[in-house]
Amino acid sequence: MTESKIEEAKRLAGIKAVADHFDPSFSYVGIGSGTTIIYVVEALKDVLSRTPSHTSSNPTTKPAIQFIPTGYQSRQVIIKAGLTPTLFDNLPEHAVLDVAFDGADEVDEDLNCIKGGGACLFQEKLVAERARKFVCVADYRKAKPRLLTTWPTIPIEVAPIAARIVLSALTALGSKAPLIRSSPLEKSGPLKTDQDFFIIDAPFPTLLTPTDVEAGKGKGDGSDGTWEVVNLSKAIKAITGVLEVGLFCGHDGIEAEQLGKRTAKGGQKPIAVYFGMEDGTVEVRRRKG
Ligand SMILES: O=C[C@H](O)[C@H](O)[C@H](O)COP(=O)(O)O
Image (cartoon, rainbow, N blue to C red; front, side, top):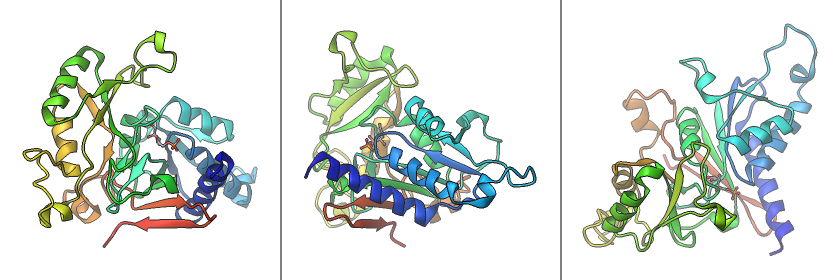
């Protein structure tokens, strides 16, 4: 498939995700990072340009929707589209985002995601967890049955001072040759995130889901070399020096409500992932239950 076909797949998925999950009456919308999110923002702009209350100069109309970026690139995309960016830490204390859109590097059948291929994951997780609905958009290359099927590593954001001890701790968890990600200009040293932290890319064997563990495909706690997604995410997050893990996984919405979380749906896992397919269709994986 040519590059332009892949871009077309992303574009069509973005349009459908926005049609299904965006409403011009919303107040706060989260915008993720990467190449696919650009098509989502284009689709949002298109919907808004056709919404009379948004385009009207009548001062009694609703204030402009505030778009919450997940980093520098994301903020530039919002500004370039002529939309209004609002920093995450400027949100009113009890504000909940109506929806957050983002891309993903790989998605499994349970909608667990790997993110951070473009070095953005910490702010993406903050924004996703604060949204009533978290929706991912990707092309068909990202749809896999399990995480780490094709995508080779888990991106992990770490404090530079702790990077070497985090590498050792990851090796102890079973990662083979985790690496600090270099800047594209190799001579510039390690790549720096929006937080001025490093990214470690840690390879692990293909991750299990809870169903796999129940089916006896492995213990999933590292003791037999297998890891279940949430177990591994927790084990990595527990290493001192780790700011955040590029695994978006965990509890589902009902559990989140029981936990009294701020988010109505809860969690880091999307409620739906839109995949632009090779044949020009869009496939949607939705959260079960
Ligand atoms: O670090 C980057 C983010 O997690 C992106 O959302 C992810 O890498 C997907 O990016 P893209 O849409 O460019 O494939």
